[in-house]
Amino acid sequence: MAEEAKEVVELKFTEEELNKLRETRNKFNQHVVDLGNAEIQLTEAEDMLDQLKKRRQEILNSYQQLKNQEAEFSKQLTEKYGVGTVDIDTGKFVPAQ
Image: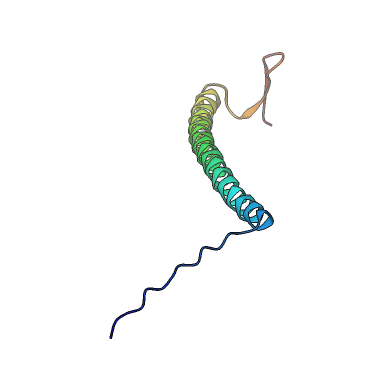
């Protein structure tokens, strides 16, 4: 049996259909661009958050060191002057009763 050659029928979309296809393609492309921009912004925000967390930890470490220094100095003052209170503005020490 001989195969019959089938004729290919060429169809053409209407201008309205083509416009709708183009509009949809453009919207998809814009979504891809928007998603890329959002990803870049998110990455930058995450980097900034990491930097802030690192800075916070540095401040907390420094705060703890300062507390330790204060405790040590307070101990030295107590050994030297005894238990009491000090007016930092005047420098006057009042021993505890």
